[in-house]
Length: 83
Image (cartoon, rainbow, N blue to C red):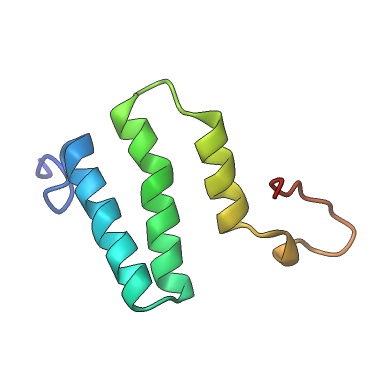
């Protein structure tokens, strides 16, 4: 049987600590890999904190940041967040 929790991430508090770590890494070394880690962790934190009740607003922010409009193939339109 696999161990419970992946890399000792078992609770929402654990994932919040990972999010803080990801933010520190992003501030120290701003690059696509660190940004990806931060936004994916942020998106999934809500799933861990409130199972079955994701915040659509935060999920939308994460989705737009993960898939910015400049990465949309020609002919497709993707919604952007208001400024």
